[in-house]
Structure formats: structure tokens, C-alpha cells
Image (tube, rainbow, N blue to C red; front, top):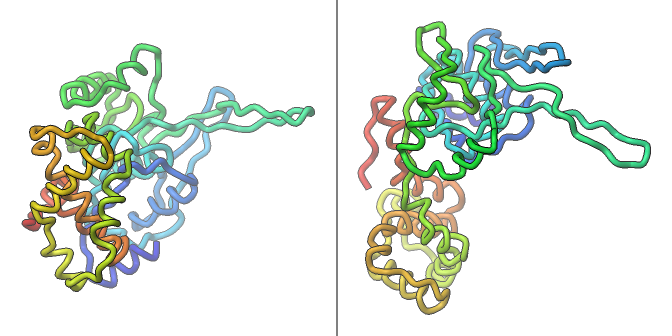
Length: 309
């Protein structure tokens, strides 16, 4: 909440809320945050089960960001409380959702204790958006296996078509879709470079962190934070050194074609990590955002242009 207040004081009119890879947290925190985007009391979510009465959750008072346009970024790792937040803002025409269908985690569980000290968690209800969309994805063996392989735009399109069996209309006439998870208003296909086996191998080897630490943390930066964020670019020689480092120190073989395909992605990772070591988290995210397709589409949806790198 304080961040929203600070943004308002700084003159912010529009907002991009990034919920990608956010696995959720406390439900009441999501409700409190969602309430910050409305001027009046609104139904934000409800729970209901076969043997559990419906329980409604409302915003309590006028929020600190009750007007101004909002974009919410989500992906397949956006789950639980994050889906409650994005679903409420979408159903109530308060935000445009950009990205990919969220995870679909919306079960309410209750723990029952036994006399021997053991316990069992039972699902007693599900989370629903204001329009009645069930957040929990329907899993059968077939579609669970299919979900694991949804790494391309065509498969996500098929997923969209499947969800059209459950359609809802907002008060402003926008169609939103059920079927589990939150389906975005603007879909962004998966970056196949980012999901490639080679990039995952590099990422999980900690090679980028180790390379940046060895190469960049022994000297003070020659930039101010503002100049670094706006003007620093990894020299080609450093990228070539990193590829050599992978081959010699990590025994990760990278072909010329793979290096070309992964260049922009790895360059962005290294630049952002250098920024974090020098200037902290703020610099890290601002540098990552320079090449972020989600941010670019979010800005375009709001009518802004992505700053040139």
C-alpha cells in the first residue's frame, strides 16, 4: 500500500503490476491490495464448497489507486492469491491482464488433527472471482500431461479455445473466460529461447552469477545509477568471454547458433546482475525491464512507447 501512496505522490497516473512468477501468499493480503484499486466497496472474491456455505470478501474502503489505468502481468507461474487479485481486477473492469494463462490454484483446505499427532488437509471449498469463475484448474490425467508441454503459442491458443466453454461478461461488456486460472486479455506467446534446454542448463548452473561476480565486483562502477540504467550495455567482448567461460569452466558446450539465439537474453541477465551488484534491486529490475516483452506490450496497451535500448 505504501508503494502505491508513494507512486501517487510522485505523480504516477497509470500502473503496471507485475505478478509473473508470483506463487501467491496470504489471501487477505491479496484482498487488501485489490481493494486499493477501487473507490468504493466491491465484492472481490468468494469461496464456496459442496458442504461449505458461500463466504464473500469485499474491499473495505476507498483505495489509494482508485483511478488511473492498470495493467497486470501474469504467466503460467502466477498462482493462488495472485490469481485472486488479477481475477478481481479483470472481472470488475479495473485492469487489463497481459501475459499467459495463470496456474489455476484455487483450493481452500482445512487441517484436521488426529489423536495420534497426525493430521490431514482436506479440500473444503474453492476460490471464485466476482463473476463466478472458478480459479482452480480442472486436472485430469490427460490435460495434466498436456499442460506440462504447453511451451508454444499454438498450444496456448488451443487452451484458450477450450476455455471458451465457460464465458462470462463484465459490466462493460468484456468477455472473460473460465476453465481454471486467469486467461489474459492480451496474450504473449512463450519465448522459446527462455524455455530452451540450453538456457535452463546455463541458468541452473549459476554460471551467470559466478561470471558477473568474478568480472565486475572487484572494481567500483564508473557510472551513476541513472547513467548506468539508461546507458550501460555489455560489450561484445564480455559476452564472448562468457561463452568461453561456459565451455572451459562449466563444461557447457554452446554452439555458435545457440550463442546467437541466446545473446539478447543472456546479455540482459548479465547487465541486470551487474546493476544489482553495483546499485541494488531497483537497478536490477529497471535494467531487466529494458528488454522485457511483457513490459513492452503493457506500455503499448497503455499508449506508451518502450524506451529504446
